[in-house]
Amino acid sequence: MLANIAGPDLFIVLAVVALLFGGSQLPKLARSLGSASHEFRKGVEDGSQAEDKTAEGKGKAEDKGKAEEKATTEDKGKAST
Image (tube, rainbow, N blue to C red; front, side):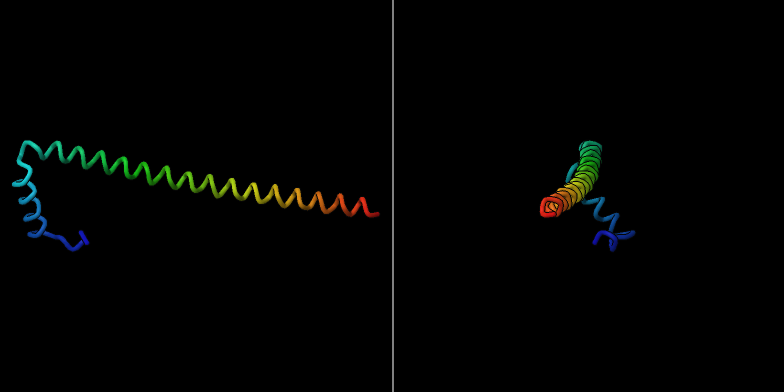
């Protein structure tokens, strides 16, 4: 959506923002937008790492469950002979 804004359109948008917020508020606004963007990216990265750990943990739990099932089956086989 923002990719369609170019040249004169972008200039008009920036001029309207400057009029609405005033020159003294623009640096503060830019800093807050930058920090919000940084926090968002950090949150996305942390979320993807948490998903990776969860998926890894599920894989280990499934492997452990299969190993226990196999051991139980082998024990039953030995007991019946």
